[in-house]
Image (tube, rainbow, N blue to C red):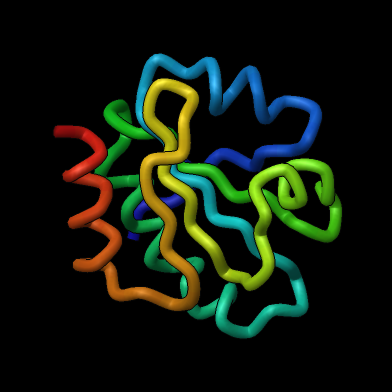
Length: 110
């Protein structure tokens, strides 16, 4: 399994690292206490390795960074938001299969 490709994102650097990125981005909104988030984490790690250089894959802890979570109306976690050119283009809520997430990433890249 590929590791180390997932970027930890905070409220402070969200605009710079995600909205101003020249690459599409996928952000996993999660929390330490969230079991489904922990189930999704290995899939997010794998995708970060597979799409390295093409897509920014980040994780944002909603407990530590409530500003960004509130701004995007995150009500349930895990939530994956897909960004392109600084705009949300797609959203997935809950634990999804790797294939489902890849499909959305590929659509975002198209």
